Amino acid sequence: MSLELKIEQVIDVLAQAAREYAPVVFANSLGAEDMVLTDLIAKHQPDIAIFSLDTGRLPQETYDLMQEVRRYYAIPLAVYFPDRKLTEDYVAQHGINGFYDSVEQRKGCCFVRKVEPLRRALNGKGAWITGMRRDQAVTRGTLELSSFDADNGLQKFNPLLEWSNKDVWAYIRQHDVPYNKLHDQFYPSLGCAPCTRSVTPGEDIRAGRWWWEDPANKECGLHVTHKPQVAHGTGVQPAPLHGRIIGIAAQAGTKQEVAA
Ligand code: SF4
Image (cartoon, rainbow, N blue to C red; front, side, top):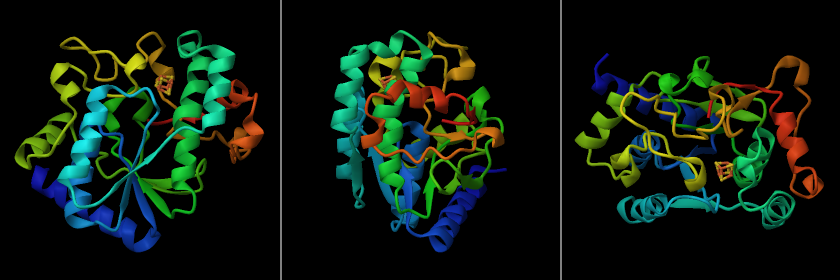
């Protein structure tokens, strides 16, 4: 399928989401895929609101891109921050870099800095859009174009599902889309600075994310699906979580992780 046809299909999916599930939001991680969607939403579906999560640990290049997006596009980029109390409690309990010590502590940090703010950003919305592609990771093989996100209680769309990495970069070059300059330094997949490294030619594009962990664990908890037996509703609110950060993350780890 040509890139032009793939672009038309994405525009159609965005329009369908906005028509059937308003209000709709797009979670912009500021990676290459998400800059393609930012460009398409700004040009074709500006009623889809765009937000990013500032974990407090992002690389400078990502902050630079946030500012560039603000200058370049007419639609606003909302930024959500971690809950102050949860963050302070995590650091007091595990240390500022406690995420290196175990998968559970890493997921606890991702919960505080990503998952909880995401839930606030999605609260009251009818659907959300992500830039996930099927061939990005072993954890994304079962991804669907559109499905109900039971964890967050709304519909979820992945309009770039069948795009290749080559398609993404062809679009960025052809449409002069701003992108994260770390991509020019062998960072194909971007995240927080202490948890992301560059990759060498031939390595998996996600090899630089949480490189010290097993690939099967390489998700931050933003994109998970319950196994039926654990569909117990983790409607998470900041206050009751005090002192239970790792417990909640470990519970999230019992879910079937399908994407990130
Ligand atoms: S990617 Fe690393 S620093 Fe960022 S939230 Fe997850 S564990 Fe914390």
